[in-house]
Length: 306
Image 1 (cartoon, rainbow, N blue to C red):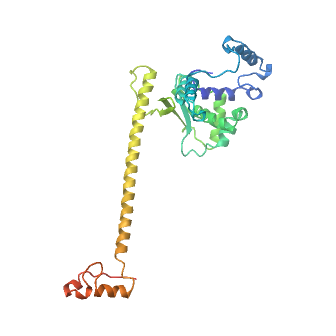
Image 2 (image 1 turned 90 degrees about the horizontal axis):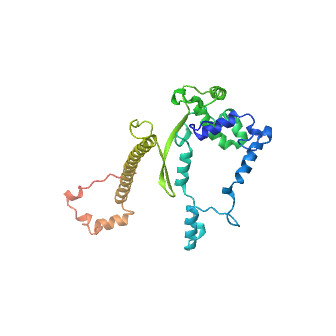
Image 3 (image 1 turned 30 degrees about the vertical axis):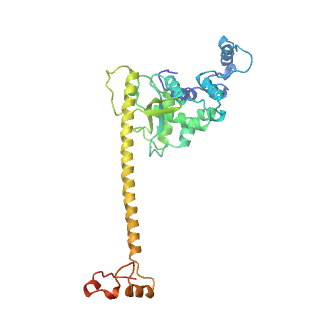
C-alpha cells in the first residue's frame, strides 16, 4: 500500500488484490494461520500502559468536546440540546490522514449510462461487496474504475496492479464503455469552517496556481480561495437570475390582476331596473343618462359581445 495514494484507492486495491481477505474475520488478517499475527498485535497493543485505566470505574471521552458538554450541563442546559459533534475538527483530521495529495471525492459524470450498479459491485468490486456490503462496494468501485482509466502520466507511481487493471477495463468495455473517456471524476476539496460549521470548497482545476508560490499546502489554500471566489460569483449570478425571473413573474401576475379588475369594471348592469335607475337618476353621483346632450351621448361606445 503506497502512502502517496488516496486511502480509498489503497483500501480498494488491497481488498481486490488480496486472495484470502474474504475468508478472514479481520481486514488485514491471514486465514491460513488463523489470524494469529493480528490477534497477537491487538493483544500487545491493549497491554500497553496507554490503555491502562488510572482510576477505577467507567471510562469517558475527556476532550474539549466532553468539557464543553459537561460545562453546559452544569450550567442548566438540557442534555438533549447538547451536541458534542464537531464536524470541522473531524474533517481537518480526515484531510490530514488523506495523504500528501489531500482529500478528494469521486463521483460519476452525468450521462454515463453504461456504468450501472451491477457493473460496479459485481464486476469491478466483487470481493469488496462480499467483505463490506454493496453500498461500500459501489463507492470503492468508482475509485477503482477511475484509477483504471486514468493515464499513467498523471502520477509518478502505479495506481493499480496490471492484472486488476485489465480485469476492470475488460468489464467496463463489455458493458459498452470506451477507454477514451473516464466516466468518474476526481475532485479535490479544501476544508473550511469553525466548530460545528463545515464548508468543503471544491478546488477548481481550471485555475492554475503559479508554481513558484510557496509550498504545496499554500498552493492548495490559494486554489481553494480562488475556487470559493468563483463559486461566489456563480452564486451571485444565480441569485440575479432568480430575482429577474421573480420580477417577470410578478409583472405577469400584476397584468392578470389588472385585466380582471378592468373586466369587472366593464360589466353591464345586472337587470333593466338598474339600467332604468341609471337613466333616470344617475349612478354613483354621475349625471343621469336622460340629460346627456347629443355630444355626450356618443362619447363612450362599448360593444358587448356574448
